[in-house]
Image (cartoon, rainbow, N blue to C red):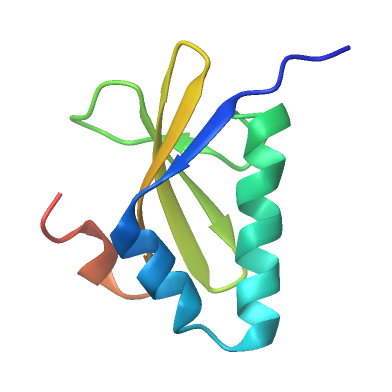
Length: 89
């Protein structure tokens, strides 16, 4: 049996998710849940200048998260083609 990580999602991410159209909401939440079993999928990339922080894309959205011990903390989501996702980090 593979390890399952605890998924912690910031309130700001929940608000962003709730504002998404249903199709994108389903896609992004499924990607979030998949991180619990595999926090380092093939399409994940380490964020430069941030320790233990990664990004992964789902459709036109980007998910930013950290991995510490057995926890994944999702701290930001946003449009992939919009640099806004990287503001206020």
